Image 1: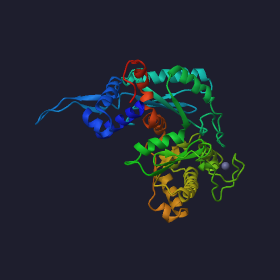
Image 2: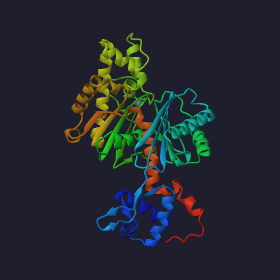
Image 3: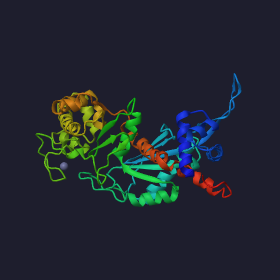
Image 4: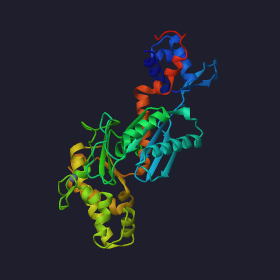
Amino acid sequence: MRRRNALSIVAIVREHGDISRADLARAANLSPATVSSIVDDLLQAGVLKETGAKASTRGRRPIGLTFNARSRLAAGISIEPEFIRMALCDLDGYPISEATHKHAFEENIPLLTNFLVARLKDLLKGSGNPFKRLGAIGIALPGPISNDQTSMLDSVGMPTATIEYQRLWALLEQKLRRPIIIDSHVNMAVLAENTLGSPKPPESLLLVRLGPVIRSAFLVHGAVVHGQRGSAGELGHVPVPGNTRRCRCRNDGCLNTIAANGAVVDTCRSQGIEVTTVAEVLDGARAGNAVCSAAVAEIARGVGFALAMAINLLGPHRVIVSGSLTTGGDMFLVPLLATARRYALPNNFDKCVISGSILQQKGEPIGAALRVLQLQLDGLLIDVVGYGDLRAARPAEASPS
Ligand SMILES: [Zn+2]
């Protein structure tokens, strides 16, 4: 009860901004004594702060209370085969610090754990925050994660072995002593796109991530649709007309076989163009190489077709496409949009806003931090920020109301 009252008090202060204890008690429908006791703890924990007495025409105004968004921070970590991206967000969801590190030892879990802990501490220190301000950590990984967080599901087409994430998770929790939530890159990134990638969060948002495999995330009223097992969003397995390549899923013509990063490179290499990355294919197209240009346009049409199928099925308010290919700008997005328009039903397509991602991979660690922020704010705020510890330290305090 006391925790619920505390959550309600925090919610009211966040909504109203500068509010007095008396007004807070009225708004929360609690006794002034109860409010005062909880507020004292929240002040001590730093979750609330006082605005100080202000002079007014009618004399002194009572001391107001405001929410201290910087009292605790959420961290997001995105792990890729070569890079680790990190971000810290305050309790309002604003990114306050970010970092990218190159690494090459993802399969040595103890080494990776030590690296992550050290870099996270660096990030906190560099932004002037003590370790105790860290609330919870979200981790973005390549593959889909089962809804109960007990296993990484096989994502058909994932070219590299996935890391032994459960051991990583256990070691990190042991070393950091903070709650950790794990989800796929795309499911984390969609949360950042929702709040930072759009002027106003749309009612529903589809994020398509073009990378080593093509996966998508669908967000409705702020919640990610995970599907019954956690593996929703395999847009890469939509067959594209005219494509006959055999997919690892054993079907023919899947989008992954032409638009996944490795497939993009292979398409050009099979025609004698020496490229090793999608960025080099785009450079080739920009420099007027006909093979690269044709490949980029053909891939864009394939993605546009699959997107049309998703738009017909989901009717999203907004679609964001991320990944190296989208950095090609018009040469990729124009044929993509033309094909999506050609195959999507007007009712679903006409008011849907489609664009490339501005955040790109920066969205993954930020989204991971936002994911645990939601967890904190949706019910665990007080536990995570240490209210439980304060209460335990004060056994003589009045019993919960
Ligand atoms: Zn397939």
